[in-house]
Amino acid sequence: MPSKRIEDIDKNFVAKKVADRDLLFADIAHKPFALSGLGWFNKEHKYCRLPESRLPETNEGVRILAWHTAGAMVRFKSNSKNLALRYELACGDDMPHMPRTGISGFDLYRGVGREKKFVGVSAPAIHQTEIEVLLVASASGQTEEWTLNFPLYNGVKQVSIGVDPGSQIEPPTPFTIPKPIAFYGSSITHGGCASRPGNAYTHMVSRWLDANHLNFGFSGNARAEPVMAELMMSLDLSAFVLDYDHNAPSADYLGQTHEPFYKLLRQAKPDLPIIMLGRPDFNPENSDCRRRQAIIRQTFENAVNSGDRRVYHINNELLFGSQNRDACTVDTCHPNDLGFMRMAEAIYPVVRQAVAENQ
Image 1 (cartoon, one colour):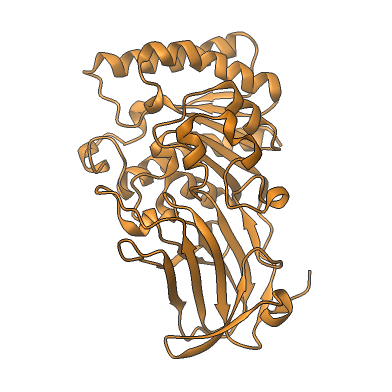
Image 2: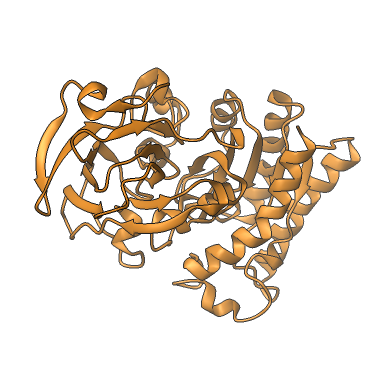
């Protein structure tokens, strides 16, 4: 697709002065902006992580949390010297244990694949729902590639990007791994409590692989119901990470659902790599932690013994590393940026191997 000016991308473009710069804004739903991370967007045109028509079949929490935009991103190239962002949030709510930049902010990266570098982040005020921010000022004017990661714990109603009048917008470089990696799990998968979206482990792993990805983390509500397996397996994926230990209300529940859920995934996708892991805040002195760990390990071993060569297991004792593990969370459970980095470093090589063996 050739490059375009904002005026040619969106007939409803908006001219607006931001930080004393005259900019033109276009809705990111228009090409050549490339939106990813929302598996049904091209069909429904909704900022929702599940198909809206199927939400009534999910649990009450998922029906709400599906509108959180964790994992969504927009990528593009531009020669604009200035880049600005305007967006409207679904709500202005806050959480006491997570930075607002992670809950409701967009963060911006420059570059391609693992060479992407963090540039800036939007920081909404408490209860603010309409945000306008200049993220790049006085760049070189050379064509560069940009990635904007959507908020982790909020929804968006509208998003537009502002550039200099007359500058060009081009499609981004295709992902090295175009079929998305799907992550299903708890609030940790959802992104709590990263300081900004790009620091969630799902983003880190995918960025290092230069892979498209889908975040199916549903805080407190990833319960391994059959409908969730059906919905996620309806998509064309390169790998699947199964990480819902923390949302199983009890070890008994985990034992009753973990292997049956894996079997539903495998039945739908016989060759899809499936990576299993448990909670990162593993405590060897806690009998419940040990029992849960054993359940997940047993599912894996049963799968291997049945002939599955596309299943992988990550020892959750390794996810926070061996030193200063107490520095990895904000509340003894949810990772901070250090915790997410250590998780990503443990998960990345396994996902990389799984995807490579499936090509």
